Length: 489
Image (cartoon, rainbow, N blue to C red; front, top):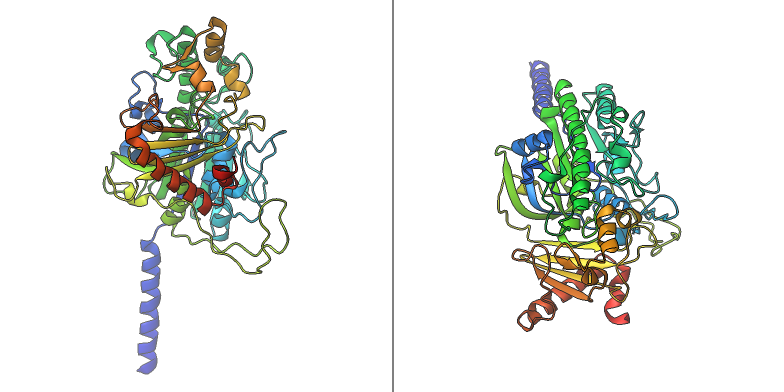
């Protein structure tokens, strides 16, 4: 009798564990990152552009209106997306490729590595732009035929092939197009757009410049409207790839247990946005569709930033990252660590899963940002603190003229202003764009274009001092080398 009862107990325990395992489905993640995409999407109110696939994800999930990159530069921003840390903490201050040569400290553990260690399959498709590879190592890289990371149809098909190899095993897919980044040189967007045969599987959708009204931060010129028409074409091309990828997820029967996040590394590739921490450069689209959501089609005003991405993904996957192993020798950069003890990972951000079903969630009220370089020749460190309706910008090297990325300087939009001798760029004086004060303080609720600097306004001095103190405390906490500039210069 005893052995019968024991056998029955063991059988019941095994069955209970089996049922429990079945009740907890595989949890997958797809992180989709566009290159230089702002709010030029239908779901964000643009009436001209066609982005039905991203619009559908927003209708099934959550659309953030106050999501921010922490640095408005491709490579540095991606390092934040992959580590949950600010680039001044990791050393990835700017572009990784070519002569720029920025890279991440060896003591940093990235998201793909954490996911690998937790039993996830990991794959990068498309734009990578990180260094060194062993810090940001993915198990697979499926980039055959992606044509400069712009053929999003092939990128989607490559993803399907990879997922289908082990569809029952949890996966993390990092899927990054180079659209809608402008091409280099005077041709700009047309360097890529004018070759429809370059994108098999993608329908060429053209836009009439006369139908487009430039936003207030850009000039209302023929050149700007023409560039925006070409920019919209590239965004639509990206959207078609997103739709194809989503369909593959459905066909493989993994869509309903996959967290999908769609965003951009930084703002549009125009002066006043990309490389700049004014709102057009850092306030970006973020669309999240979680299988766990009961309430869908939500628009939330939660303030989140790209340091929150890693904690959110780990939270969804119920993954606790393994501690960072001890570093027993001095790094090339940064403080040495001879403690011989593994250190738990601490992120600068936090999970925003609790905000997905709430329009006005509590606890998401502030954002910090840190930009230092784009190209290595573009030294202009900025630190930003957004608190409620107010935004403080600390232009650390304010004595310098604001530098230009090579592709932005060559843009017809900027060149038309230079050639005409224009005094305004959008609603901002060209002089003010190039020559900035040490501190800028804006009420971004009432002054989204950041034209009325309150830093010298007597009624805002107490707020200015408080935010300055809190910004400096943030720099100290996150080990920002530029914190010394508060007193050194």
